[in-house]
Length: 79
Image 1 (cartoon, one colour):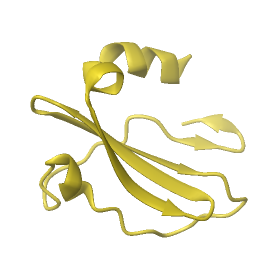
Image 2 (image 1 turned 30 degrees about the vertical axis):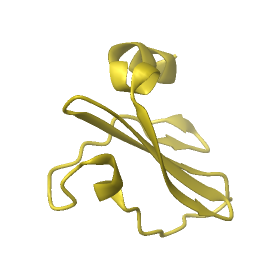
Image 3 (image 1 turned 120 degrees about the vertical axis):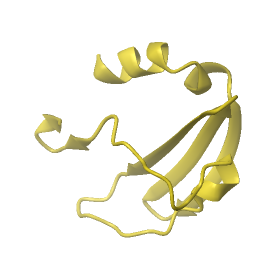
Image 4 (image 1 turned 90 degrees about the horizontal axis):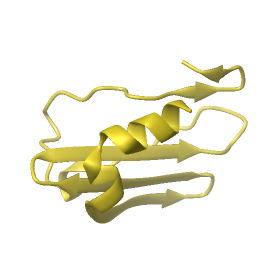
């Protein structure tokens, strides 16, 4: 439900430009941008944490800017 609500709240997730950012084994990342709104989605389907470098600048975001974690999952559910 949290993911659906986020999708409804952020127009860029529905209608924004799509930016492919990372495809590295079990990790994918993509960005959506619309106007000044930028969203980066990172998905890791591995059983353990992975570290990847995500080129957020491809979405038009400032890599030195402030980022907010909107939704995080774990084996126990959503945080």
